[in-house]
Length: 389
View 1 (cartoon, rainbow, N blue to C red):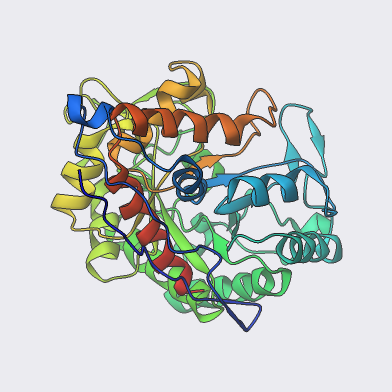
View 2: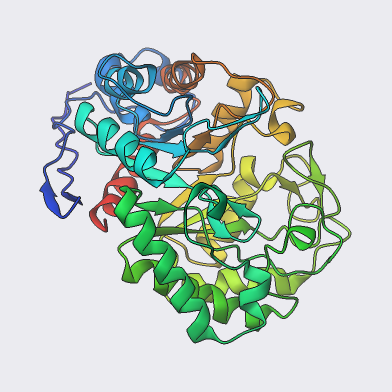
């Protein structure tokens, strides 16, 4: 087969107000035919360069409140070309506070040290919704941002102002990506992970759409990327996907999809986060996060979303307790996720997780289970996303 020289792209990003030149070089890779054919198995792909591409598809968590040049997270980003990091205030496996976030000055220094000591263009992310789900808590010296539930009872102008204030704080810290807003409709107020935590703007899908729009616009005004979650809707669930698999087959309401449809249609969705929820009416075999029927069938084709799709945390109980790690990673990429979150903040902490994920995806590329063209397409979408920073 003739070799084809392919120049993937040059990513231009603004970081800290300056021009960021692409850290990814043009790659020379042997194209891989689609899916698993005998011809696919006999093709040799440049492993080093392919792994660099795969690394861009990961957002990883880590322990540490400082980041020296030889720290775990700096070495991991540089060695694996990791695409992003996620910060936490609480360490779940250890049951202790102060995992990454202690106070504003320390957090700003941590992010600055990571960015200055690494060679990969980074999405620096956090879960900052306001209310109970906010890693940047007022108790640590950060701004007090109302919950979505509280904001949803007020005006869109107040929601915009709150999100802009939050975005300004994130920007000052060097954080450029917020996993917010929640676009879930509060179908079940007793829902332990949405309704009871005040994470939904309301039970009216139109109200949710309007306030999610205002929240996104507020963050955008401060230069912060957003992610609408949890597609296709987590508001009717009765259990928590952090703990185990969630089945919404009998509880899901069609209106739960409306906010996602509206935000995508209006071009407001920088990224969409897909939930670990089962709806057997759509896919009897896999949760949305591992389902081609949900990601390609509903999100890409029906809703017309062309941007970056992100899996909810792959370390959550819904995945860990039901699938092998490598199996889940491969299924998530095959289903159409562009970015996988590996928080390393579930039941266990394992610093080999990012490499194991890359190994699993690389092995699937070699076998033809994941076409290299899919990896390229994901990295191109990620590059476009990063240009917005």
